[in-house]
Image (tube, rainbow, N blue to C red; front, side):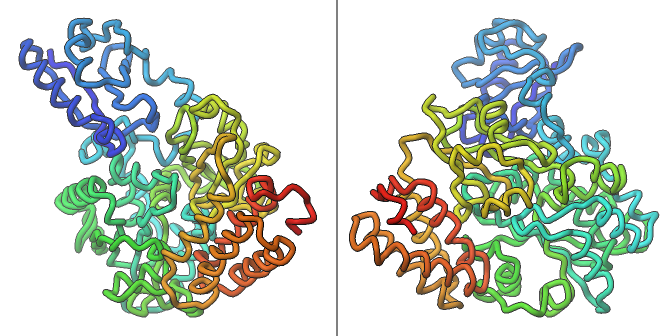
Length: 517
C-alpha cells in the first residue's frame, strides 16, 4: 500500500533544503522498494521547523522536522512512513499548540493540500463561495462582503465593501479587478504563502469580485522576486480555465472573467495602488493625484477594484459561510482574522492567523517564544519598513486598527519584526529615511527632497551636533513629509523616525528629555 508523504514547496522551505529533502526521500524509497506518493504541499508556517516532512497515518499526519538530506536514511530506518519514532519526530501536526491556538480561515488549506491540485481544492471546500455568488445578484454579493466588515489587508484598512459598491455603481462598458501582490514590506510573507500554498483561493476571490462589480478582466500584479508564486499561479489559472472556472462562460453562467499575472519591475513604490496601475499600463511607476479614485477612474481610466492578496483570499469563505460568520471574529471595527507574520529576532518565526484582539505581548511570547537570542525584546516594528517602533510599554496593545492608530502606529500588512536589546534604533530610523530616498518615485518634493535632508539631519543628531537646533528641525521636516507627501511612502516615513526618537532617545546619544522636544 502506497504511503503518502508531504514535503513543502513553499519558497522558505525550499531555501532551507526542501527540494533536496524531497529528492532524497524519493530516491531512498526507490532504493528500499517502498511505494510512496510524494506530495509537495504549502508550508504550515512554522519556519523554525522547516523542512517539515509529514506522513499520512491512520491517526492523522505525523510530522518530522527540521529534516535535512542526512536525516533521510535514518528516518526510513525508523519506519517513519508508518509514523515510526525518531529524534526528529514531532507527533501529530494537528496537535501542535502553535496551530491549535490559531483561527485559520484564509489559511485553512495551506499546508494541507497540494497547492495546484484543483481536485484537492474542491475536496476542501473550494469554489463553494463562487457557487453561492453565481446564484446571487451582484448587489447581494457586495452586501455579504460589506456585512463581513472586511477591510483592506494591505495597509490602508479601507472597507472592502465600500470600494466594491463604488465600482458596482459606476457605469462603464469595461471594469477591472487588480490584485496587488507586490508584497514588498520587510518581515511580510503572507501574500507569498497564499500564492504558493493555495493559489486557487486567490483566483476564486478575484472571480467573486468580478461577478460582484461587473468586471470581466483581472490582473495579479506580482512582485518579480516571487518566482515560485508565478509558477503556482499560472498553473492554477490554467487548470481553473480548463475546468470552466475562468473564461468566457464561468460554469455555464454566461458570465465572463479572465485573469492574467503581470510581473512588476522591483519598485517598492508600485505597491501603492495608483503607481501600480501606471506600471500595469506600461508607464513609469509614478503616483497619481487623487481624485479621481481608482474605483471611479482606475486602470486605463475605467472603474477598478484594487485589493491586496489577503483581502481577496478572504472573500471565498465570506461567500461560503456568510458575512455574519466572518464578522463574528475580531473586535471593534476590525473584523475577521489577520495573518500575522513573525520575523526578525524571534525564536519561533512564522505565520499566525488569529482574530483581531490578540495583544503584541501574547503574540511575541505565546507564539513567538521570545527572542531568538534569549535577550530581552527591546522593540518591534509593525507594518513594514515605514511602521513605527513599539517599545515594551506598548506590547499590550491589541492587534486592532483603531488601537494601533491611537498609539500613532500602524498595523499595516501584519508584519512584525522583532529586535532585542542590542539593536541600535537610531541606525534603524536613519535607514527609514534612506529607504524613502532610494524608493521615492520623485513626483512630490516632500518625499524626494525631504528624505535626503532627513538622512543628513539624522547623521548630525546621531553625532550629537547642534541638538537644540537639529531635533526640532527633524520634527518639522517629518511634519512636512507627513502632511505634504502624495502617498504613504513619504507620508509614513516619519513613523519609524519619530517613534525611535521618542521611545529610544538614548540610542541617539540623547540623555535629557528636553533635547528631543
